[in-house]
Structures are given as structure tokens and as C-alpha cells.
Image (cartoon, rainbow, N blue to C red; front, side, top):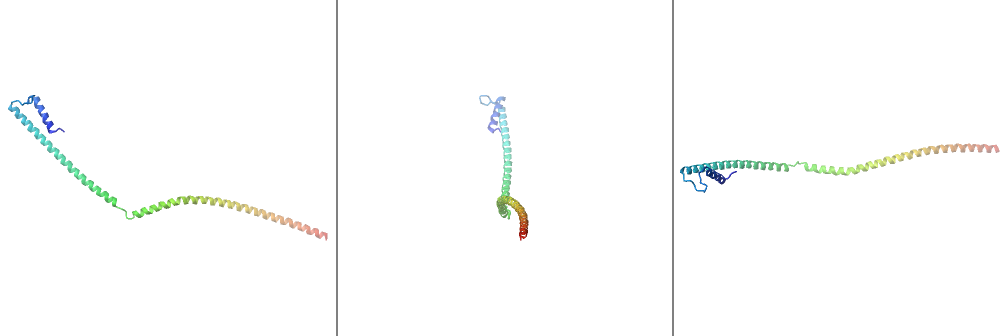
Length: 169
């Protein structure tokens, strides 16, 4: 934006170029020229005053807008504070219960792994037990067969001996 002093200097340069003011800085002796100079200066001052008035109007409008923005900012800050202070009455209890759930979950994980490991060990032990029980049952059956066979043979031998003794008598 051009300052009033710069505008005045520009006006003087224009007047020098048009011949209203001599180049050595002394005014020409013409009343008509002096009148034109005064008229130009008063027009310049009027324009300057109008520009200053418009600048002030714009500045006032900007200040008013800034005031409204500040008020809205304050209202928004108050709303934000209310939202931050708004607490769910059960929120604290919910947080405590959630923390307990997380703690129990952390404890459950190794317990679950331990349980699976022990179930696997149990199944392996049960399978081994069942295999040994089956083997025992087979051995008992074999033993029974052998005992039965042995008894039959002994009975047969006893009968033979008994017949032989009777035959000797």
C-alpha cells in the first residue's frame, strides 16, 4: 500500500513533469498553476482521507469478526471442558472389572496350556496303562492256559502212576 508521503511525492513528480513546478524546486509564478497545485493537493488529501476511512472500516469489521471468533472459541473450550468432565458413573467400575478380566485372562493362558499338557500326559499315561492292562490280560490268559494244561498233564501222570501202582499190587 502506498503511504501518504509517497503519494504526495508522486504528485509532485507529475506536477514537475507537467511544468507546474520548476526543476530547481521553486514554484513558477503563475496563480493558475498555484491554484491547480492546491486543488491537486486537496484532492489528494480527500482521497487519502477516504482511503484511511475505508481502511478503518475494514479494520473495524476484522476486529468485530475476531471478537466473534474469540467468543466462539471460548464457547467451544467450555463445551470441551464439559465433555472431559462428563464421566460415566459406572465408568470407574467398568475399568476395574476390565482390568480384572485382563488379569484373569493372563492367568488363564498358562493354566490352559498346563491343562492341555497334562491332558496330553494323561492320555499318554492312559494309553500306556491300557496297553499294559491288555498285555497283563493276555499274560493271565496264557497263564491260565498253561496252568490248565499243566494240571491236565499232572492229572494224567498221576492217573498213570496210580494205574502203575495198582498194577504192581
